[in-house]
Amino acid sequence: MKHIINVFNLKTIKLLLFAVIVQNTNAQNPILNKSDKNFVYAADPAAEVFNDTVYVYCSRDATDAVSYKTMQDYVILESTDFKTWINHGVVLEARKYNWAGGQMSPPDAAYKEGWYYLYFPYNKTNIGVAKSKTPIGPWEEAVTDKITTIFDPTVFVDDDGLAFIYGNDHKVNIGEPGAHIMGAKLKDNMIELDGPWFRLSEETVSEAVHVFKKDCLYYFRARVGPVTIYSMADTPLPKKYAT
Image 1 (tube, rainbow, N blue to C red):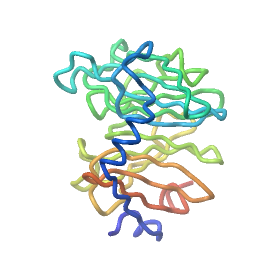
Image 2: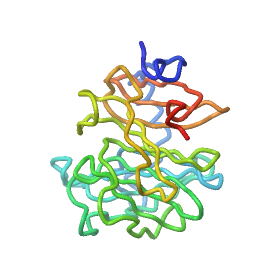
Image 3: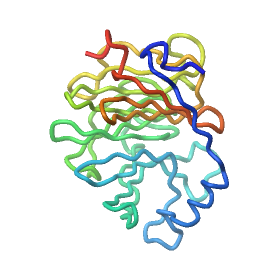
Image 4: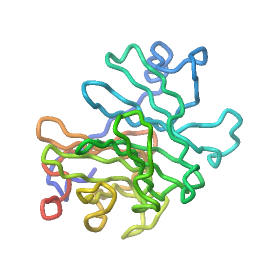
């Protein structure tokens, strides 16, 4: 299999997800229970670590939902030990912004220079941004229109302060036809692209792109059907585009 290997010259690995293992793990250690205060049907989690605390940013399914169109706001869960969780409930109702409407899909958050930025899709692929001085809000508009279009956005700020946004073009046409891992650089203000989108994978992916860094390597994960694939690289974008 070849994904980011052609661009970054490193290997791609597939992880098989066995439903029975996932089911058993979830049943034994849920981080949301119906008996919890502020219980919500959270979906599409994006976990980020700020100040030695993990924050899980989720979209929300309405109790009486009959389609994805009822997804309208965002939820945050917090933990310092992965055992005890604080459920902050709904923290951002993005549809209250007069420029954002439609399906609110998976969000992600990033921190830079004193501000936390929450990137949220509306109308499935239009990416809006809210900002806050804390990881949980209160959130205010950082923009008054979409900053780009992509499906399942994830944002990564590198050690040198450079920021990048990733996703896949599953629901929107960017470049060549298909559904691939895409990446672009963000400007220092975190609310504008600093150049075009670049295709980073050969094989098509379904959704759930996520990027993180460990031991000087960048990991690019995405779901392909029932399988999670990830690729490793030594730069966040192809070298000629990464600076």
